[in-house]
Length: 264
Image 1 (tube, rainbow, N blue to C red):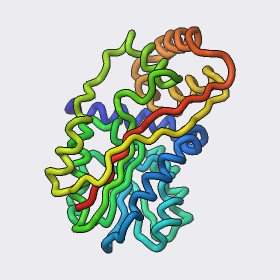
Image 2 (image 1 turned 90 degrees about the vertical axis):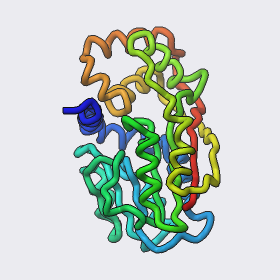
Image 3 (image 1 turned 45 degrees about the vertical axis):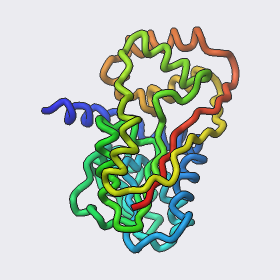
Image 4 (image 1 turned 60 degrees about the vertical axis):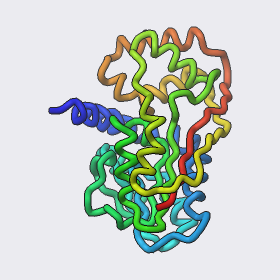
């Protein structure tokens, strides 16, 4: 198995185990970013064709898409069987929606040049090569099609639970290569897209306490795959240090995501 395939397998396993908790804990907290990403598709007419949602997770984009683009065929794609199961439960309420289990980092050639829009929220940064993924997503658009992608950049906040967890984690796990961020716009432009918007979106978020946040992040969030790989002892050490440095009581913060909107 190649390194790319191994990373995808670990990612899928982590999200398989996290799917139910993610739907309950993170989907409501991420809703403002989802709403903004979907609304960006409506700032002008769209051509005929489906809306593709790579890295759809439990498919929270679907309700907003059905409201703003009624009657439009919508297809979610996710690698995780657990996420696909939850996504299909949501899609069952929408006649024009479908969910495909597969690698959203390299789209099936059948989508090339056929899609009216591609929208994705908080999936891009998890992929092994995000700049190549966004190139693949851009290639799926037909003339006049629109891309709306929201993702967590390398730095989301300087003070808050995301920042503290990143600091605690860096003492134990080497930082990943974030150079892909500066390659996103050139990768999109290389596929003939015109960048209409490149902005940061910040919305308030809260957690009952530091313990609840940490447990959600390692059991039902993006650290689940790492927790599975490193084991219980590693997670306990991480937890102890995080809680030692975290404030008491309810925790409010305002993390910042990046939003790219482009049109072919």
